[in-house]
Length: 112
Image (tube, rainbow, N blue to C red; front, side):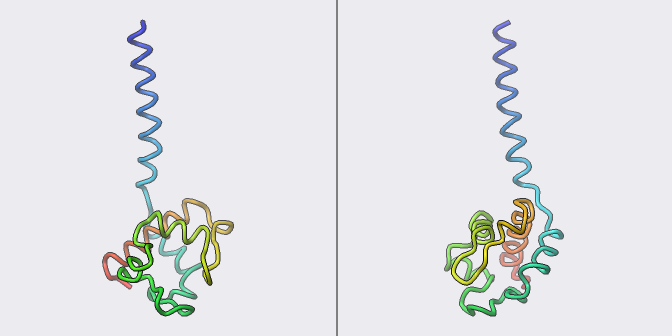
């Protein structure tokens, strides 16, 4: 009986980790693009930056500003910084995750 309980506990632990991390990998580039168009493109048309020309969304600029990961982009979008407003109160975590993946995908594929 103890073996069965241990097995069930291990299964529950594994399932809880798998559920959390599996959903973290699921993103929707189409949804990210729509969010970008509706919220970001005014200041970042074509991946540029109309406020600060040095801080574009091109890969080299993202790397230079330590923003070349989904996590770093999520933090920037959520909290804002300097002249960029915070979107954490306007967009859901899922929307921010999708737009961060869209931005990084565009940068990595030089698709701006």
